[in-house]
Length: 143
Image 1 (cartoon, rainbow, N blue to C red):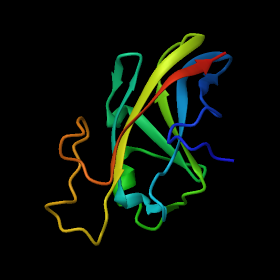
Image 2: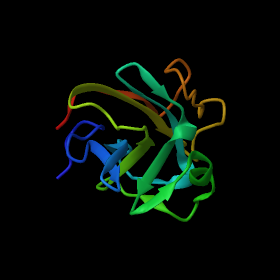
Image 3: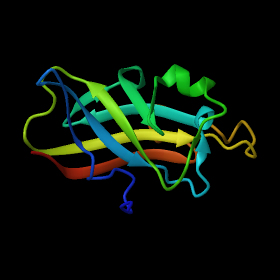
Image 4: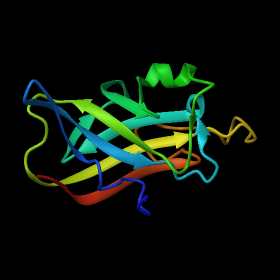
């Protein structure tokens, strides 16, 4: 079952390869009521405890398939349902330390029925963004 917040607690953990932490993942849900085609997704930065990760450093895992920011723009036939969780995976040697973390994720969805001057997204700021924004959650825990 999904939580009401965009950033989900369940699934927030370090990623391991050959027994060592190589990164972490952040589970998110879409807040757009109809779900979106992946080519409509506008990824932005991720901030964890003041560490900034650009959209190019984030891999989106949706429906079990990994996408870079550039690949999302070309994935016009893949759909992210409102009832499904996406995992934002970030490579970081050693992963995140045990304990609490403040997590912010920035993304939006383009709407085909909006005029272009309204349908804008700034990947770094909420100033000019439409249909999305920055979602923050304190006290995300790694055990």
